[in-house]
Image 1 (tube, rainbow, N blue to C red):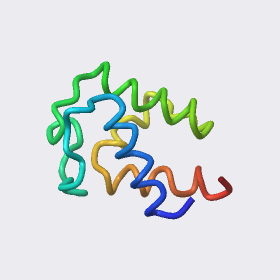
Image 2 (cartoon, helix red, strand yellow):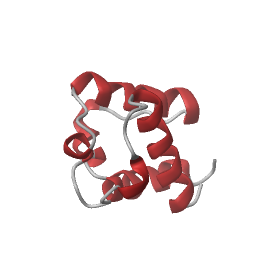
Image 3 (cartoon, rainbow, N blue to C red):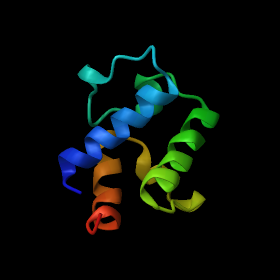
Image 4 (cartoon, rainbow, N blue to C red):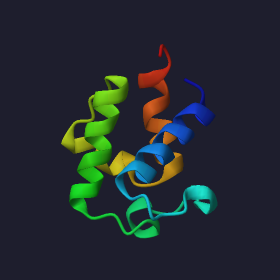
Length: 83
């Protein structure tokens, strides 16, 4: 997957979890939980969807790596390179 594919995948998951959110104006360097008013359960849903859709395991110790859209892309790119 390319960086753009990963960005689209993350935003699609956020839209699925919180359909009322407008993900078109996301700030890639701002905390996703703050931008989209995601609680801890919503964040866990994102992690679970990544595993379900793409087979990516994100250990709890790495959750902070998914704080922003940019950090998600950086963290997931090597894990999704072959997908």
